[in-house]
Image (tube, rainbow, N blue to C red; front, side, top):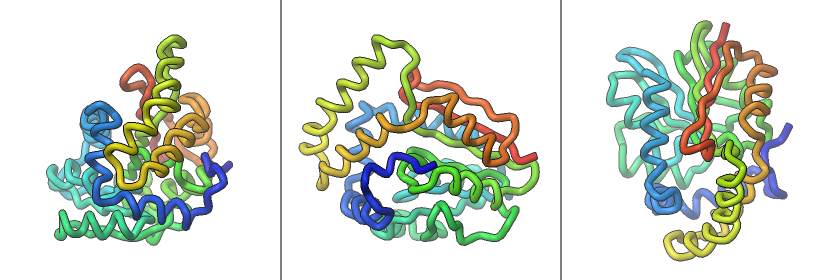
Length: 230
């Protein structure tokens, strides 16, 4: 299965993220009305990183998402396919081992990490199934995956309002705060095309993950999926 490719090739998506790297975190904060901070705190709780553990933070962007894991004493590897994002992250956090990598062909050996996690990046990968298998491959037996991704609001009236926001409000807001507003139009389209909570759980199970479960954040705007490598 391919995630919301929306007629864009991997190099086009990478270039798009290169272009928004400098203001990416600020833009996300504005567009999510500050909710992205809440979501990242929930990811940190779910990961539960501990000193000495190895954590892979895939689609880490500028590595903002990696900082809570590093603060616990875990060894975190921020990985992203956008060189522009990685360069920006290296300027901000030169001590982190930022690594360039394709989610479908990760540059790591088998069974390396205690936890693999990806936030708001899986839907931008060209082949979702391949990425989930790769995450499984590089995870130690007994390790876990934590995925935070936009999903489908569970209350129908709210889902309608949310979709209207994505289609009508997000593009003009993005034009006001982003250096590349077209990127956020693409992201809105990719969110609408993304599988809902049960469908993503099925994909995780097909990739080999067990004990797959999810919980909704912000009424289902975002879902936090977890799985274990048996």
